[in-house]
Length: 247
Ligand code: FPP
Image 1 (cartoon, rainbow, N blue to C red):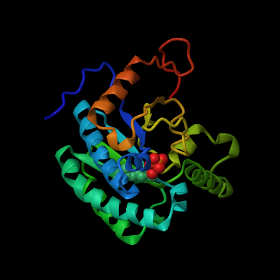
Image 2: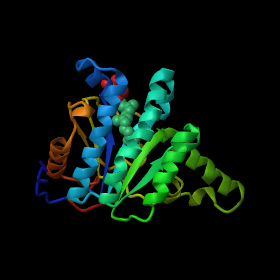
Image 3: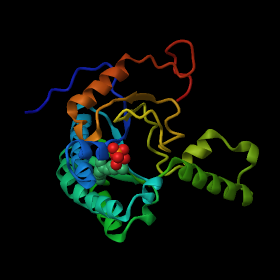
C-alpha cells in the first residue's frame, strides 16, 4: 500500500538525518547488531521514497562517522558488507526516482570493494539532477573543517589569498560538497540530543527534530511527521521577523 504524503506548505530542499538506534532496536528485538543495521538500511530506502514523493531535493544520511572506526572489527566489517549490499538494493530506487548518489567523507579510508561499488553507483547516477542522496561515510565535521582550513592556509602561503580576505564562502567552498545547499532540517532518531560531529558548519541555521523512534522503525509516516513539525517552526535566522537574514 502506498502512503499518501501530507500536503505541506514548505518542503525543505535538503534534509539531513542522524540514523541512531540500530543497536538498541536489535537488542529490543533479540537480533544481532548487524541485523539492526540491515533493518536500518531499509529505513533509508523508505525515507528516500518519501522524500522523492514530497519533492525534497537532497537527503543526507550519516552512515558511518570517523569515530565509528573505533567499533569492534566484526561490526565494522559487517557494516562495510552492508554498504555494498545496500547500494545493490537501492539501485532500483535511485534510477526510478532519478536520484544522484554522492559521498561525503574520507572515501580513501574505505576498503577497496566498498570504494569500487560506490564509484560505480556514482558514475551510473551522475546524470540525474532531480534528487540527490548524500551518504556521509567515514565522515566527521571537524576533519572536514580542518581539511578546508588546510586548503585555505595553502592559498595564503601561495600568496593567492590575504588572511583578511578569508570569508565564510571560502570555508563553504572548501568543504567536501560545496555545491550542496545547507540542510534546512536535521532529524535525529532514538532520542539523543547531540550533533555527534555531523555537518557542524552546514547545520548552523537548520531546524532540528529529534524523535524517540529508533532508526529501523523510522519509515514514511515518521518522516512525514518530522516534516509536519518542521512546518510548525518559525524560522527567523536571528532576525525579528520571518525575513531571511542569513542561512
Ligand atoms: C547508528 O546506530 C547507526 C550506524 C552507526 C550505522 C548506520 C548505517 C545504516 C543504517 C546502514 C545504511 C546504509 C547505507 C548504505 C546508507 P547505533 O549502532 O549507534 O545504535 P545504538 O546507539 O542503538 O547502539
